[in-house]
Image (cartoon, rainbow, N blue to C red; front, side):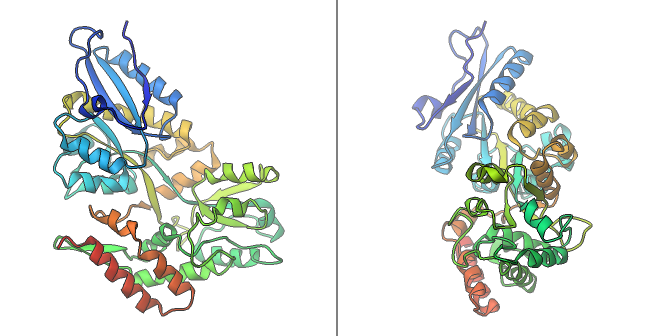
Length: 417
């Protein structure tokens, strides 16, 4: 019987983990160890134990070594791992990070497997698109999460609103009715740029565009300015700070005070709210961010993870098989239900229908997007010019002038010159 190593939680990588491993003494002749790097809290220990046991039963010549990594400093660790002589076989990375690693030319092209084995035509766009570079698929979608509207049912009932809005116009009208008698219609911080991105995309705008291999900021386009105008109108229907983001102070804690009708957040914020104020237990509702029409919800930023296979993996075929299993309908369903995630395919949205928050998230995810697919986008976020732009507009500065300043800074950050 194998001496299975199921899950190793590491804060610092040992040199053994960095160089990976092949056949391990004591596992039997010809046994192959496939090393898989997953991120902390992406999957529960119970899920991982079930997956490993099931996979090793079906693949008796394979031993899975699951190494759980911390998010802090992971970019540098992954870069070193894929550039070494013998890296891990499978790595979980943030969906918006794939371009950064693919630029090195050190990731396996998984286009064939995507089309032939993994049903890529049904993948969530917010996971699939950032994993695709110049038409080749390097990142395989694993799971997604996105923002929804969390609302206080009691405040909605008090305002005479018997159903969540399904269009932007209805949303503004309802929020205005909720913003009365000392209550905030919505708590929306002035620098929640991920939410702004969705409004910009709904208008047909972009944060940045690529032309001839060069990226340029596009937040100053007429369509992008329309998105900012809607954000300003919505933000005014509450007391959110104009010069801070949703973490300063944490918006879930503000909502827990009981006098805020809505926030825009991932559904897991509901747990924080109820912990802070148990009286709100059972009184929280969820709906997708409304779109311009009732035909489809608003566009949202999709966060989540993709799976990549480094070229320096010693077990390419086995690594691809593990990715196929993790991305399969069976384990996507298990992961979504265990972790309250959105599974990687629109066709699997109904597997989370029993959870109101996750169901609202899955509905919105069908219209998900990711940040611009430039390998340098992380440089934009490191000193994010979109945040001060938003504050400037909310404080009354000329939107066109402020947007041009932000667009120029985005262009400079994305420049390879």
